[in-house]
Length: 547
Ligand code: NAP
Image (cartoon, rainbow, N blue to C red; front, side, top):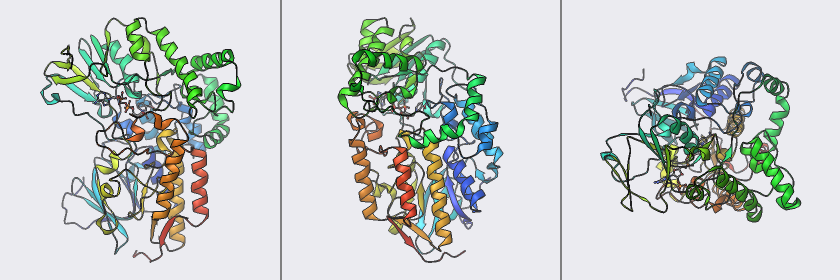
Protein backbone atom coordinates (compact mmCIF):
# COMPACT_ATOMS: atom_id res chain seq x y z
CA UNK A 1 0.00 0.00 0.00
CA UNK A 2 1.20 3.53 -0.66
CA UNK A 3 2.89 5.20 2.24
CA UNK A 4 0.93 8.38 2.94
CA UNK A 5 3.85 9.99 4.74
CA UNK A 6 4.74 12.93 2.51
CA UNK A 7 8.04 13.47 4.32
CA UNK A 8 9.59 10.17 3.15
CA UNK A 9 12.10 10.69 0.34
CA UNK A 10 10.76 10.11 -3.15
CA UNK A 11 11.20 6.61 -4.54
CA UNK A 12 13.80 6.77 -7.34
CA UNK A 13 13.15 5.54 -10.86
CA UNK A 14 14.49 6.12 -14.34
CA UNK A 15 11.00 6.63 -15.67
CA UNK A 16 7.51 7.07 -14.30
CA UNK A 17 4.67 6.18 -16.65
CA UNK A 18 1.18 7.46 -15.83
CA UNK A 19 -1.56 5.07 -16.93
CA UNK A 20 -1.81 1.32 -17.50
CA UNK A 21 -3.87 1.09 -20.65
CA UNK A 22 -2.63 0.03 -24.08
CA UNK A 23 0.00 2.79 -24.02
CA UNK A 24 1.35 2.43 -20.49
CA UNK A 25 1.71 -1.34 -20.73
CA UNK A 26 3.71 -1.21 -23.91
CA UNK A 27 5.83 1.71 -22.74
CA UNK A 28 6.77 -0.27 -19.64
CA UNK A 29 7.77 -3.25 -21.77
CA UNK A 30 9.87 -1.07 -24.12
CA UNK A 31 11.71 0.75 -21.35
CA UNK A 32 12.12 -2.02 -18.81
CA UNK A 33 12.61 -5.10 -20.96
CA UNK A 34 14.45 -3.56 -23.91
CA UNK A 35 16.44 -0.73 -22.32
CA UNK A 36 16.80 -2.12 -18.80
CA UNK A 37 15.37 0.97 -17.13
CA UNK A 38 13.85 1.05 -13.67
CA UNK A 39 10.24 1.96 -14.36
CA UNK A 40 7.09 2.36 -12.29
CA UNK A 41 3.64 2.68 -13.82
CA UNK A 42 1.13 4.61 -11.72
CA UNK A 43 -2.51 3.84 -12.45
CA UNK A 44 -5.55 5.45 -10.82
CA UNK A 45 -7.85 2.47 -11.40
CA UNK A 46 -7.86 -0.76 -9.45
CA UNK A 47 -7.08 -2.71 -12.58
CA UNK A 48 -5.24 -2.32 -15.86
CA UNK A 49 -6.99 -1.51 -19.14
CA UNK A 50 -7.20 2.28 -19.27
CA UNK A 51 -10.26 3.35 -21.23
CA UNK A 52 -11.54 -0.23 -21.18
CA UNK A 53 -11.34 -0.37 -17.40
CA UNK A 54 -13.81 2.53 -17.17
CA UNK A 55 -16.01 2.18 -20.24
CA UNK A 56 -18.29 -0.73 -19.30
CA UNK A 57 -21.55 0.82 -20.49
CA UNK A 58 -24.11 -1.39 -22.25
CA UNK A 59 -22.96 -2.13 -25.78
CA UNK A 60 -19.37 -0.92 -25.24
CA UNK A 61 -17.15 -2.49 -27.83
CA UNK A 62 -14.37 -1.25 -30.06
CA UNK A 63 -15.09 0.16 -33.50
CA UNK A 64 -11.73 -1.05 -34.81
CA UNK A 65 -11.82 -4.64 -35.96
CA UNK A 66 -10.42 -6.96 -33.33
CA UNK A 67 -7.63 -8.42 -35.47
CA UNK A 68 -6.22 -4.90 -35.79
CA UNK A 69 -7.08 -3.63 -32.31
CA UNK A 70 -4.12 -5.27 -30.68
CA UNK A 71 -0.36 -5.03 -30.30
CA UNK A 72 1.61 -5.96 -33.37
CA UNK A 73 5.12 -6.01 -31.86
CA UNK A 74 5.09 -9.65 -30.82
CA UNK A 75 4.56 -12.62 -33.14
CA UNK A 76 3.93 -14.72 -30.05
CA UNK A 77 0.99 -12.56 -29.01
CA UNK A 78 -0.51 -12.78 -32.47
CA UNK A 79 -0.06 -16.55 -32.41
CA UNK A 80 -1.43 -17.14 -28.92
CA UNK A 81 -4.35 -14.74 -28.60
CA UNK A 82 -7.69 -15.41 -30.27
CA UNK A 83 -10.43 -12.80 -30.67
CA UNK A 84 -13.98 -14.09 -30.70
CA UNK A 85 -15.88 -11.38 -32.59
CA UNK A 86 -15.35 -8.91 -35.42
CA UNK A 87 -15.47 -6.04 -32.89
CA UNK A 88 -14.27 -6.90 -29.40
CA UNK A 89 -16.54 -6.18 -26.46
CA UNK A 90 -15.08 -4.44 -23.42
CA UNK A 91 -14.56 -7.53 -21.20
CA UNK A 92 -12.69 -9.28 -24.00
CA UNK A 93 -10.35 -6.30 -24.44
CA UNK A 94 -9.64 -6.31 -20.70
CA UNK A 95 -8.92 -10.04 -20.87
CA UNK A 96 -6.54 -9.37 -23.75
CA UNK A 97 -4.66 -6.62 -21.92
CA UNK A 98 -4.36 -8.81 -18.82
CA UNK A 99 -3.08 -11.63 -21.01
CA UNK A 100 -0.42 -9.30 -22.43
CA UNK A 101 0.51 -7.97 -18.99
CA UNK A 102 0.87 -11.51 -17.63
CA UNK A 103 2.80 -12.74 -20.66
CA UNK A 104 5.39 -9.97 -20.21
CA UNK A 105 5.26 -9.98 -16.42
CA UNK A 106 4.28 -6.31 -16.39
CA UNK A 107 2.08 -6.19 -13.30
CA UNK A 108 4.95 -6.25 -10.82
CA UNK A 109 5.89 -2.73 -11.92
CA UNK A 110 2.36 -1.31 -12.04
CA UNK A 111 1.02 0.40 -8.94
CA UNK A 112 -2.78 0.37 -9.06
CA UNK A 113 -5.18 2.59 -7.13
CA UNK A 114 -2.68 5.44 -7.41
CA UNK A 115 -3.94 8.68 -8.90
CA UNK A 116 -1.26 11.18 -9.83
CA UNK A 117 -2.05 14.61 -8.42
CA UNK A 118 0.81 16.47 -10.04
CA UNK A 119 4.42 16.55 -11.14
CA UNK A 120 7.11 19.19 -11.19
CA UNK A 121 10.44 19.41 -12.96
CA UNK A 122 13.51 20.10 -10.86
CA UNK A 123 15.90 21.97 -13.13
CA UNK A 124 18.91 21.50 -10.86
CA UNK A 125 18.61 17.73 -10.85
CA UNK A 126 16.99 17.45 -14.30
CA UNK A 127 14.41 15.15 -12.77
CA UNK A 128 10.66 15.00 -12.32
CA UNK A 129 9.03 14.69 -8.93
CA UNK A 130 5.65 13.03 -9.18
CA UNK A 131 3.06 13.34 -6.41
CA UNK A 132 0.08 11.09 -5.90
CA UNK A 133 -3.22 11.98 -4.28
CA UNK A 134 -2.30 9.68 -1.40
CA UNK A 135 0.83 11.77 -0.77
CA UNK A 136 3.47 9.43 -2.18
CA UNK A 137 6.31 10.93 -4.19
CA UNK A 138 8.49 9.52 -6.92
CA UNK A 139 11.54 10.94 -8.63
CA UNK A 140 12.48 10.04 -12.20
CA UNK A 141 14.52 11.38 -15.07
CA UNK A 142 11.65 10.77 -17.47
CA UNK A 143 7.93 11.30 -17.05
CA UNK A 144 5.73 9.64 -19.64
CA UNK A 145 2.01 10.25 -19.78
CA UNK A 146 -0.06 7.35 -21.07
CA UNK A 147 -3.28 8.90 -19.82
CA UNK A 148 -5.41 8.32 -22.90
CA UNK A 149 -7.24 10.89 -24.99
CA UNK A 150 -10.77 10.16 -23.80
CA UNK A 151 -10.51 9.53 -20.10
CA UNK A 152 -11.81 12.71 -18.48
CA UNK A 153 -15.61 12.35 -18.38
CA UNK A 154 -17.68 15.36 -19.45
CA UNK A 155 -20.85 15.65 -17.38
CA UNK A 156 -22.56 18.79 -18.65
CA UNK A 157 -23.65 21.32 -16.06
CA UNK A 158 -27.38 21.00 -16.59
CA UNK A 159 -29.23 22.74 -13.75
CA UNK A 160 -31.03 20.48 -11.31
CA UNK A 161 -28.87 17.35 -11.54
CA UNK A 162 -28.16 17.51 -7.81
CA UNK A 163 -31.93 17.30 -7.13
CA UNK A 164 -32.57 14.28 -9.37
CA UNK A 165 -34.08 11.54 -7.25
CA UNK A 166 -33.28 8.74 -9.67
CA UNK A 167 -29.85 7.29 -10.45
CA UNK A 168 -27.49 8.82 -12.97
CA UNK A 169 -24.34 7.56 -14.66
CA UNK A 170 -21.72 8.74 -17.13
CA UNK A 171 -20.88 6.05 -19.66
CA UNK A 172 -17.15 6.56 -19.14
CA UNK A 173 -17.39 5.81 -15.41
CA UNK A 174 -19.82 2.91 -15.56
CA UNK A 175 -20.41 0.82 -12.40
CA UNK A 176 -18.65 -2.53 -12.54
CA UNK A 177 -21.70 -4.36 -11.25
CA UNK A 178 -23.75 -2.98 -14.17
CA UNK A 179 -27.08 -1.16 -14.05
CA UNK A 180 -30.44 -2.89 -13.90
CA UNK A 181 -32.71 -1.11 -16.38
CA UNK A 182 -35.61 -3.59 -16.07
CA UNK A 183 -38.92 -1.80 -15.58
CA UNK A 184 -37.21 1.62 -15.46
CA UNK A 185 -37.74 4.76 -17.51
CA UNK A 186 -34.33 5.74 -18.85
CA UNK A 187 -33.17 9.01 -20.36
CA UNK A 188 -29.99 9.01 -22.44
CA UNK A 189 -28.33 12.30 -23.30
CA UNK A 190 -25.89 12.11 -26.19
CA UNK A 191 -25.76 10.48 -29.60
CA UNK A 192 -22.04 10.17 -30.30
CA UNK A 193 -20.24 6.84 -30.81
CA UNK A 194 -21.04 5.89 -27.22
CA UNK A 195 -24.73 6.82 -27.22
CA UNK A 196 -25.21 5.07 -30.55
CA UNK A 197 -23.75 1.87 -29.08
CA UNK A 198 -25.64 2.12 -25.80
CA UNK A 199 -29.18 3.01 -26.93
CA UNK A 200 -30.12 -0.32 -28.59
CA UNK A 201 -28.90 -2.33 -25.60
CA UNK A 202 -30.61 -0.11 -23.03
CA UNK A 203 -33.82 -0.08 -25.06
CA UNK A 204 -33.89 -3.87 -25.06
CA UNK A 205 -33.84 -3.91 -21.24
CA UNK A 206 -35.69 -0.79 -20.08
CA UNK A 207 -39.41 -0.11 -19.73
CA UNK A 208 -38.85 3.03 -21.78
CA UNK A 209 -35.89 4.85 -23.29
CA UNK A 210 -35.91 8.53 -24.22
CA UNK A 211 -32.92 9.58 -26.31
CA UNK A 212 -32.12 13.29 -26.04
CA UNK A 213 -30.46 14.31 -29.29
CA UNK A 214 -28.77 17.67 -29.71
CA UNK A 215 -26.96 16.88 -32.95
CA UNK A 216 -28.11 14.17 -35.32
CA UNK A 217 -25.31 11.81 -36.30
CA UNK A 218 -24.37 9.49 -39.12
CA UNK A 219 -23.81 5.84 -38.44
CA UNK A 220 -23.00 2.83 -40.57
CA UNK A 221 -23.85 -0.74 -39.52
CA UNK A 222 -21.05 -2.57 -37.75
CA UNK A 223 -22.32 -6.02 -38.75
CA UNK A 224 -20.64 -7.52 -35.75
CA UNK A 225 -20.46 -11.31 -35.77
CA UNK A 226 -18.39 -14.15 -34.36
CA UNK A 227 -15.14 -14.67 -36.25
CA UNK A 228 -14.98 -17.85 -38.27
CA UNK A 229 -12.12 -20.34 -37.79
CA UNK A 230 -11.11 -19.60 -41.41
CA UNK A 231 -10.83 -15.86 -40.75
CA UNK A 232 -8.83 -16.42 -37.56
CA UNK A 233 -6.42 -18.73 -39.39
CA UNK A 234 -6.07 -16.24 -42.25
CA UNK A 235 -5.20 -13.43 -39.83
CA UNK A 236 -2.58 -15.47 -38.03
CA UNK A 237 -0.98 -16.63 -41.27
CA UNK A 238 -1.11 -13.20 -42.89
CA UNK A 239 -0.52 -10.84 -40.01
CA UNK A 240 2.72 -9.50 -41.47
CA UNK A 241 0.75 -8.20 -44.47
CA UNK A 242 -2.02 -6.83 -42.25
CA UNK A 243 0.59 -4.96 -40.22
CA UNK A 244 2.16 -3.57 -43.37
CA UNK A 245 -1.24 -2.25 -44.45
CA UNK A 246 -1.92 -0.69 -41.04
CA UNK A 247 1.47 1.01 -41.15
CA UNK A 248 0.97 2.36 -44.65
CA UNK A 249 -2.45 3.98 -44.25
CA UNK A 250 -3.77 7.27 -42.97
CA UNK A 251 -5.73 5.87 -40.06
CA UNK A 252 -3.80 2.76 -39.12
CA UNK A 253 -6.69 0.47 -40.02
CA UNK A 254 -6.21 -2.77 -41.92
CA UNK A 255 -7.79 -1.42 -45.11
CA UNK A 256 -6.56 0.94 -47.77
CA UNK A 257 -8.28 4.12 -48.90
CA UNK A 258 -9.26 3.71 -52.54
CA UNK A 259 -7.44 5.83 -55.11
CA UNK A 260 -10.58 6.68 -57.04
CA UNK A 261 -12.60 9.87 -56.65
CA UNK A 262 -16.33 9.86 -56.08
CA UNK A 263 -16.53 11.55 -59.49
CA UNK A 264 -14.52 8.91 -61.35
CA UNK A 265 -17.59 6.67 -61.40
CA UNK A 266 -21.17 7.10 -62.60
CA UNK A 267 -23.90 7.80 -60.03
CA UNK A 268 -25.14 4.22 -60.52
CA UNK A 269 -21.70 2.73 -59.93
CA UNK A 270 -21.26 4.94 -56.88
CA UNK A 271 -24.58 3.83 -55.43
CA UNK A 272 -23.58 0.20 -55.96
CA UNK A 273 -20.24 0.82 -54.21
CA UNK A 274 -21.98 2.45 -51.25
CA UNK A 275 -24.51 -0.41 -51.10
CA UNK A 276 -21.70 -2.96 -50.96
CA UNK A 277 -19.91 -0.92 -48.31
CA UNK A 278 -23.12 -0.62 -46.25
CA UNK A 279 -23.59 -4.40 -46.48
CA UNK A 280 -20.00 -4.95 -45.38
CA UNK A 281 -20.25 -2.39 -42.58
CA UNK A 282 -17.64 -0.74 -40.41
CA UNK A 283 -15.37 2.25 -40.50
CA UNK A 284 -14.08 1.42 -43.97
CA UNK A 285 -17.24 2.95 -45.40
CA UNK A 286 -15.33 6.23 -45.64
CA UNK A 287 -12.42 4.52 -47.47
CA UNK A 288 -14.35 3.76 -50.63
CA UNK A 289 -13.25 6.96 -52.33
CA UNK A 290 -10.18 9.05 -51.70
CA UNK A 291 -12.09 12.33 -51.49
CA UNK A 292 -14.95 11.57 -49.07
CA UNK A 293 -13.06 13.20 -46.22
CA UNK A 294 -11.55 16.07 -48.18
CA UNK A 295 -14.07 17.34 -50.72
CA UNK A 296 -17.47 18.71 -49.75
CA UNK A 297 -19.25 17.64 -52.96
CA UNK A 298 -17.74 14.16 -52.77
CA UNK A 299 -18.67 13.93 -49.10
CA UNK A 300 -22.26 14.94 -49.86
CA UNK A 301 -22.74 11.77 -51.92
CA UNK A 302 -21.84 9.58 -48.93
CA UNK A 303 -23.82 11.78 -46.56
CA UNK A 304 -26.93 11.61 -48.74
CA UNK A 305 -26.61 7.84 -49.07
CA UNK A 306 -26.56 7.42 -45.29
CA UNK A 307 -29.39 9.90 -44.73
CA UNK A 308 -31.54 7.96 -47.22
CA UNK A 309 -30.75 4.74 -45.35
CA UNK A 310 -31.85 6.36 -42.06
CA UNK A 311 -35.13 7.47 -43.65
CA UNK A 312 -35.66 3.97 -45.03
CA UNK A 313 -34.99 2.26 -41.70
CA UNK A 314 -36.93 4.54 -39.35
CA UNK A 315 -40.66 4.04 -39.83
CA UNK A 316 -42.03 7.21 -38.23
CA UNK A 317 -41.33 10.02 -40.75
CA UNK A 318 -41.02 12.73 -38.07
CA UNK A 319 -38.46 10.68 -36.12
CA UNK A 320 -36.66 9.77 -39.33
CA UNK A 321 -36.42 13.45 -40.22
CA UNK A 322 -34.94 14.35 -36.82
CA UNK A 323 -32.38 11.57 -37.12
CA UNK A 324 -31.39 12.35 -40.69
CA UNK A 325 -31.20 16.15 -40.59
CA UNK A 326 -27.47 16.15 -39.96
CA UNK A 327 -25.64 19.46 -39.89
CA UNK A 328 -22.07 18.41 -40.65
CA UNK A 329 -20.25 16.44 -43.34
CA UNK A 330 -20.00 12.67 -42.93
CA UNK A 331 -16.90 11.69 -40.89
CA UNK A 332 -16.11 15.31 -39.96
CA UNK A 333 -16.97 14.12 -36.47
CA UNK A 334 -15.66 10.69 -35.49
CA UNK A 335 -18.00 8.40 -37.50
CA UNK A 336 -19.84 5.91 -35.30
CA UNK A 337 -20.74 2.40 -36.35
CA UNK A 338 -23.72 0.67 -34.81
CA UNK A 339 -25.68 -2.45 -34.12
CA UNK A 340 -29.31 -1.57 -34.91
CA UNK A 341 -29.21 2.03 -33.67
CA UNK A 342 -31.70 3.49 -36.15
CA UNK A 343 -33.87 0.36 -35.90
CA UNK A 344 -34.14 1.05 -32.15
CA UNK A 345 -36.39 4.04 -32.91
CA UNK A 346 -38.99 1.64 -34.37
CA UNK A 347 -39.49 0.11 -30.92
CA UNK A 348 -42.66 1.00 -29.03
CA UNK A 349 -40.64 1.80 -25.90
CA UNK A 350 -38.25 4.33 -27.47
CA UNK A 351 -38.76 8.07 -27.99
CA UNK A 352 -36.46 10.64 -29.56
CA UNK A 353 -36.41 14.17 -28.16
CA UNK A 354 -34.86 16.80 -30.41
CA UNK A 355 -33.23 19.05 -27.84
CA UNK A 356 -31.87 21.40 -30.45
CA UNK A 357 -35.48 22.33 -31.33
CA UNK A 358 -36.67 22.17 -27.72
CA UNK A 359 -33.63 22.38 -25.41
CA UNK A 360 -33.40 20.96 -21.91
CA UNK A 361 -34.54 23.57 -19.40
CA UNK A 362 -33.52 21.64 -16.31
CA UNK A 363 -33.32 18.30 -14.61
CA UNK A 364 -36.12 17.97 -12.06
CA UNK A 365 -36.31 15.55 -9.13
CA UNK A 366 -38.38 13.22 -11.32
CA UNK A 367 -37.03 13.69 -14.82
CA UNK A 368 -36.20 16.29 -17.46
CA UNK A 369 -38.13 19.43 -18.32
CA UNK A 370 -37.73 20.93 -21.78
CA UNK A 371 -37.96 24.63 -22.51
CA UNK A 372 -41.43 24.15 -24.00
CA UNK A 373 -42.53 22.97 -20.52
CA UNK A 374 -42.77 19.32 -21.60
CA UNK A 375 -41.85 17.00 -18.70
CA UNK A 376 -40.25 13.60 -19.31
CA UNK A 377 -40.43 11.40 -16.20
CA UNK A 378 -37.27 9.33 -15.66
CA UNK A 379 -35.89 6.83 -13.17
CA UNK A 380 -32.37 6.65 -14.62
CA UNK A 381 -30.32 9.23 -16.50
CA UNK A 382 -27.41 8.15 -18.68
CA UNK A 383 -24.89 10.75 -19.76
CA UNK A 384 -23.32 9.60 -23.04
CA UNK A 385 -21.91 13.10 -23.27
CA UNK A 386 -18.31 12.34 -24.07
CA UNK A 387 -15.06 13.61 -22.66
CA UNK A 388 -12.91 16.63 -22.08
CA UNK A 389 -10.82 15.11 -24.84
CA UNK A 390 -7.05 15.09 -25.23
CA UNK A 391 -6.20 17.94 -22.87
CA UNK A 392 -8.60 17.01 -20.02
CA UNK A 393 -6.56 14.06 -18.72
CA UNK A 394 -3.45 16.29 -18.54
CA UNK A 395 -4.99 19.37 -17.06
CA UNK A 396 -6.65 17.58 -14.20
CA UNK A 397 -3.10 16.95 -12.96
CA UNK A 398 -0.99 19.84 -11.73
CA UNK A 399 2.05 19.57 -13.98
CA UNK A 400 4.74 22.26 -13.85
CA UNK A 401 7.89 22.42 -15.91
CA UNK A 402 10.81 24.80 -16.24
CA UNK A 403 10.55 28.03 -14.18
CA UNK A 404 7.37 26.74 -12.54
CA UNK A 405 5.41 27.11 -15.78
CA UNK A 406 2.26 25.01 -15.46
CA UNK A 407 0.83 23.01 -18.33
CA UNK A 408 -2.44 24.87 -17.80
CA UNK A 409 -0.57 28.14 -18.44
CA UNK A 410 1.34 26.75 -21.41
CA UNK A 411 -1.95 25.57 -22.96
CA UNK A 412 -4.10 28.51 -21.96
CA UNK A 413 -4.86 29.34 -25.59
CA UNK A 414 -5.08 25.67 -26.54
CA UNK A 415 -2.57 22.82 -26.60
CA UNK A 416 0.76 23.25 -28.38
CA UNK A 417 3.32 20.51 -28.72
CA UNK A 418 6.06 19.19 -30.93
CA UNK A 419 4.88 16.03 -32.72
CA UNK A 420 2.31 15.55 -29.96
CA UNK A 421 5.18 14.03 -27.99
CA UNK A 422 6.72 16.87 -25.97
CA UNK A 423 5.79 20.36 -24.82
CA UNK A 424 8.27 23.23 -24.75
CA UNK A 425 9.07 24.14 -21.15
CA UNK A 426 8.59 20.53 -19.98
CA UNK A 427 11.91 18.72 -20.50
CA UNK A 428 11.89 14.91 -20.43
CA UNK A 429 8.10 14.80 -20.44
CA UNK A 430 6.81 12.53 -23.17
CA UNK A 431 3.12 12.57 -24.00
CA UNK A 432 1.92 9.37 -25.68
CA UNK A 433 -0.93 10.22 -28.08
CA UNK A 434 -0.85 13.80 -26.80
CA UNK A 435 -2.51 16.75 -28.57
CA UNK A 436 -0.78 17.24 -31.92
CA UNK A 437 -0.35 13.49 -32.53
CA UNK A 438 -2.50 11.47 -34.96
CA UNK A 439 -3.89 9.41 -32.03
CA UNK A 440 -7.69 9.60 -32.05
CA UNK A 441 -7.88 9.80 -35.83
CA UNK A 442 -6.35 6.33 -35.95
CA UNK A 443 -6.83 2.78 -34.86
CA UNK A 444 -5.26 3.56 -31.49
CA UNK A 445 -2.81 0.68 -30.98
CA UNK A 446 -0.93 1.78 -34.11
CA UNK A 447 0.02 5.29 -32.93
CA UNK A 448 0.50 3.98 -29.40
CA UNK A 449 3.08 1.41 -30.50
CA UNK A 450 4.82 3.98 -32.70
CA UNK A 451 4.97 6.58 -29.92
CA UNK A 452 6.17 4.14 -27.26
CA UNK A 453 8.90 2.81 -29.58
CA UNK A 454 9.95 6.32 -30.64
CA UNK A 455 10.17 7.43 -27.00
CA UNK A 456 12.22 4.35 -26.10
CA UNK A 457 14.52 5.04 -29.06
CA UNK A 458 14.91 8.63 -27.95
CA UNK A 459 15.76 7.65 -24.38
CA UNK A 460 18.25 5.05 -25.62
CA UNK A 461 19.90 7.74 -27.76
CA UNK A 462 20.09 10.10 -24.79
CA UNK A 463 21.68 7.46 -22.61
CA UNK A 464 24.21 6.52 -25.28
CA UNK A 465 25.24 10.13 -25.78
CA UNK A 466 25.18 11.36 -22.21
CA UNK A 467 22.22 13.64 -22.84
CA UNK A 468 20.37 14.59 -19.67
CA UNK A 469 17.41 16.52 -21.03
CA UNK A 470 15.36 16.85 -24.17
CA UNK A 471 12.91 19.64 -24.82
CA UNK A 472 11.10 20.94 -27.90
CA UNK A 473 12.28 24.30 -29.22
CA UNK A 474 9.86 27.18 -29.73
CA UNK A 475 10.57 27.14 -33.46
CA UNK A 476 9.74 23.43 -33.80
CA UNK A 477 6.61 23.87 -31.68
CA UNK A 478 5.44 26.76 -33.80
CA UNK A 479 6.04 24.94 -37.03
CA UNK A 480 4.36 21.74 -35.77
CA UNK A 481 1.30 23.74 -34.69
CA UNK A 482 1.15 25.21 -38.20
CA UNK A 483 1.49 21.70 -39.65
CA UNK A 484 -1.35 20.40 -37.44
CA UNK A 485 -3.58 23.27 -38.56
CA UNK A 486 -2.69 22.88 -42.22
CA UNK A 487 -3.31 19.13 -42.08
CA UNK A 488 -6.76 19.69 -40.56
CA UNK A 489 -7.59 22.42 -43.07
CA UNK A 490 -6.83 20.02 -45.93
CA UNK A 491 -9.74 17.86 -44.72
CA UNK A 492 -13.38 18.43 -43.86
CA UNK A 493 -12.71 17.78 -40.17
CA UNK A 494 -12.87 21.44 -39.06
CA UNK A 495 -16.29 21.74 -40.73
CA UNK A 496 -17.96 20.04 -37.76
CA UNK A 497 -18.00 23.06 -35.52
CA UNK A 498 -19.27 21.21 -32.43
CA UNK A 499 -16.74 18.41 -32.55
CA UNK A 500 -14.58 17.34 -29.64
CA UNK A 501 -11.60 17.31 -32.01
CA UNK A 502 -11.86 21.11 -31.71
CA UNK A 503 -12.63 21.13 -28.00
CA UNK A 504 -16.05 22.53 -28.87
CA UNK A 505 -17.98 20.06 -26.69
CA UNK A 506 -16.69 21.57 -23.44
CA UNK A 507 -17.94 25.10 -22.71
CA UNK A 508 -15.05 27.57 -22.38
CA UNK A 509 -12.41 25.23 -23.85
CA UNK A 510 -10.16 26.96 -26.42
CA UNK A 511 -11.05 26.00 -29.99
CA UNK A 512 -7.94 24.39 -31.40
CA UNK A 513 -7.96 21.41 -33.72
CA UNK A 514 -6.08 18.95 -31.52
CA UNK A 515 -5.13 15.77 -33.41
CA UNK A 516 -2.72 15.68 -36.36
CA UNK A 517 -4.77 14.86 -39.46
CA UNK A 518 -1.88 14.37 -41.88
CA UNK A 519 -2.05 10.60 -41.54
CA UNK A 520 -0.27 8.02 -39.45
CA UNK A 521 2.08 6.85 -42.19
CA UNK A 522 3.29 10.40 -42.92
CA UNK A 523 3.60 11.12 -39.21
CA UNK A 524 5.72 8.02 -38.66
CA UNK A 525 8.04 9.17 -41.44
CA UNK A 526 8.38 12.62 -39.89
CA UNK A 527 9.18 11.17 -36.46
CA UNK A 528 11.77 8.82 -37.98
CA UNK A 529 13.41 11.72 -39.80
CA UNK A 530 13.49 13.83 -36.64
CA UNK A 531 15.28 11.00 -34.83
CA UNK A 532 17.65 10.31 -37.73
CA UNK A 533 18.65 13.96 -37.76
CA UNK A 534 19.75 13.84 -34.14
CA UNK A 535 16.34 14.84 -32.76
CA UNK A 536 15.85 17.88 -34.95
CA UNK A 537 13.67 20.49 -33.26
CA UNK A 538 14.65 19.45 -29.76
CA UNK A 539 17.14 21.10 -27.46
CA UNK A 540 19.39 18.46 -25.95
CA UNK A 541 20.90 19.21 -22.55
CA UNK A 542 24.27 17.54 -22.36
CA UNK A 543 24.97 17.85 -18.64
CA UNK A 544 25.45 14.44 -17.08
CA UNK A 545 22.80 13.26 -14.69
CA UNK A 546 23.66 12.16 -11.18
CA UNK A 547 23.00 8.42 -10.98
P1 NAP B 1 -19.04 12.49 -28.13
O1 NAP B 1 -18.71 11.99 -29.45
O2 NAP B 1 -18.41 13.74 -27.66
O3 NAP B 1 -20.62 12.64 -28.09
C1 NAP B 1 -21.24 13.25 -27.00
C2 NAP B 1 -22.71 13.39 -27.27
O4 NAP B 1 -23.29 14.06 -26.15
C3 NAP B 1 -23.02 14.24 -28.49
O5 NAP B 1 -24.17 13.76 -29.09
C4 NAP B 1 -23.24 15.62 -27.87
O6 NAP B 1 -24.04 16.47 -28.64
C5 NAP B 1 -23.95 15.24 -26.60
N1 NAP B 1 -23.83 16.27 -25.59
C6 NAP B 1 -22.70 16.70 -24.97
N2 NAP B 1 -23.00 17.67 -24.10
C7 NAP B 1 -24.33 17.85 -24.16
C8 NAP B 1 -25.24 18.71 -23.50
N3 NAP B 1 -24.81 19.62 -22.61
N4 NAP B 1 -26.55 18.63 -23.80
C9 NAP B 1 -26.97 17.74 -24.70
N5 NAP B 1 -26.19 16.90 -25.38
C10 NAP B 1 -24.86 16.96 -25.10
O7 NAP B 1 -18.75 11.39 -27.00
P2 NAP B 1 -18.77 9.80 -27.11
O8 NAP B 1 -19.96 9.34 -27.84
O9 NAP B 1 -18.54 9.29 -25.74
O10 NAP B 1 -17.55 9.49 -28.00
C11 NAP B 1 -16.28 10.10 -27.76
C12 NAP B 1 -15.24 9.36 -28.53
O11 NAP B 1 -14.89 8.18 -27.85
C13 NAP B 1 -15.65 8.89 -29.89
O12 NAP B 1 -15.70 9.90 -30.84
C14 NAP B 1 -14.62 7.83 -30.15
O13 NAP B 1 -13.41 8.38 -30.55
C15 NAP B 1 -14.50 7.22 -28.78
N6 NAP B 1 -15.38 6.06 -28.68
C16 NAP B 1 -14.99 4.93 -29.29
C17 NAP B 1 -15.79 3.85 -29.25
C18 NAP B 1 -15.38 2.62 -29.92
O14 NAP B 1 -14.39 2.47 -30.53
N7 NAP B 1 -16.21 1.67 -29.81
C19 NAP B 1 -17.02 3.89 -28.61
C20 NAP B 1 -17.40 5.05 -27.99
C21 NAP B 1 -16.57 6.14 -28.03
P3 NAP B 1 -23.36 17.50 -29.69
O15 NAP B 1 -22.90 16.64 -30.82
O16 NAP B 1 -24.45 18.44 -30.01
O17 NAP B 1 -22.22 18.15 -28.96
